[in-house]
Amino acid sequence: MKFLNRDDNALTLTNDDLKKMNFVYKSKKHAVLFGLFAIALSYVIWRFSDEIKNIHVYVYWFSFFLAGALCFGTITTLWTNCRLEIDASIKKVSYSLSTLFGKTEWKRDFGDFKEIRIYRPIASSGNAGHAAFLKVLLITAKGEEIPLVAGISGTNNKQKTRKLAEKMSNIMSLRVIEEL
Image (cartoon, rainbow, N blue to C red; front, top):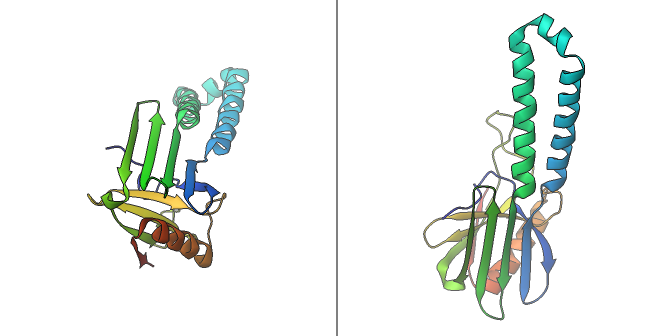
């Protein structure tokens, strides 16, 4: 089964009422920025191709490779569509992940999940520290993890994250574990 990884961008809460919670993948604005950067880089390479070739032919080809990699990353991110819905009225969780490489969809009963964890991801800067924000992980009975966040920007304070985890716990009757 294909899921987002624990340290990937999380699904963001978009709709929250007494019986239903909706989460979606929101990284399209970053993909557009990378796409614009790739287009600008491609234009610069094309415009100054003779000067770049004079520096070194490897710099010239690496520049094209970098622009291509940025374009590919933009396309795959824009193509990615992920959503999770927790519906208390039918006691089911619906999950849908559609990428350039395939599609996964399922509906599971609340009993197919074992716990909710509050988790602090490792910082992306490569050091051994932890990030400043928290995520909520919905853990399946098989141990699979689905990362969720409460805020649109992905940065959550402890109270907001605990509130999200407690609400999910109340709807799904699961225990909350903090991994801080």
